[in-house]
Length: 303
Image (cartoon, rainbow, N blue to C red; front, top):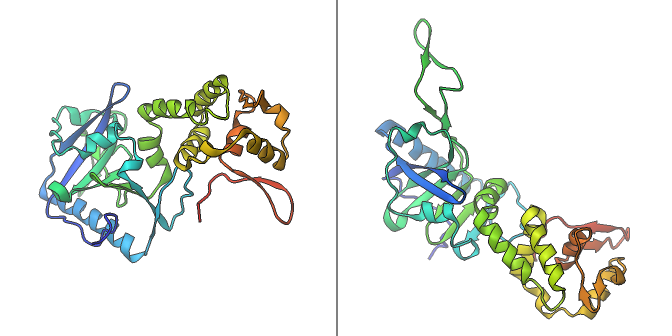
C-alpha cells in the first residue's frame, strides 16, 4: 500500500474552490466559492500540473521536524500527529461541511488563503496557497482591452497561481513545499504559541530554576528562532536524562564558563543569556575539527 504522501494519481472529477479569512483573534472562517465549468477546468489543470511536477521532477520527500532545513528539491512530510490538533486553519479546512460564500462576502478583501479541493469524501485533497486571491477594484484601476479601447472592470478580480504551498490530506497530514507559509499557518498561530509557552515552562525542570522556565517561556513566545528550538528539544526529549554535571561539562567544552550559567546546581536562564542557553540545550553549537572555530547550526537534519 502506497504511503499517503505518494500522490501518483489524484481524483479530479470534482473540483471546488475554498477560501478562508480570519475571524477575530484566533478564528478561521472557510467558505466555498461557486465556480463555473471554465474556471473548474483551469483549476483542475493546476492540480494536475502540481502532481505531475512532483513526480516528474522526482522531488524527495523528507519527514519534517521542528528544525528541518528546507531545500528546493524536497518536500516536507508533516504527519497529522505533529500538527497542533486545535489549529484553527487545520480544523476549518478538514471540515466536510464548508458553507458557500455569499456574493456580498466575496467583496471582503481580507482573505487569508485559498485552496483548490480535488476529489470528495475520504479522497479529498486540498492544494493550499497562502495568499489572497482577490484583487480589489476599489483600490486599483483594472481594465480589459477590447477591440478598440480599454474598459474598466469594477467587480473584484481573482487570480490563482499554478503552484501551491502545501497539500492537505485530511486526517493524514501535510505535504509542504515552502517554509514561510507553513510556519505562518501552522507554527506561528496564537493557539500554538500559547502551547509553546506551556512546553517551555516544563522543558527541563530537572535542570533549571522556576524563574528560568518563566524567562524561557517568554522568549519562546517573543522570538520564532527560540520557539523553533524549544519545539525541537521537546520532540527529541533528550534533556530528560541530562544531569547538571553533564551540562557543566558541555558548557565547558563549548568554551563557556559554567559558573555564569549554573547557580546552586540549577541552570539560571536570564534575558541576556537565553539565546546562548537554548543553542547549547538544542546542541546547535560545535567546533570545527580542522579550524577549531566555534560554529552555530541554524538548522540540522538527523542522520
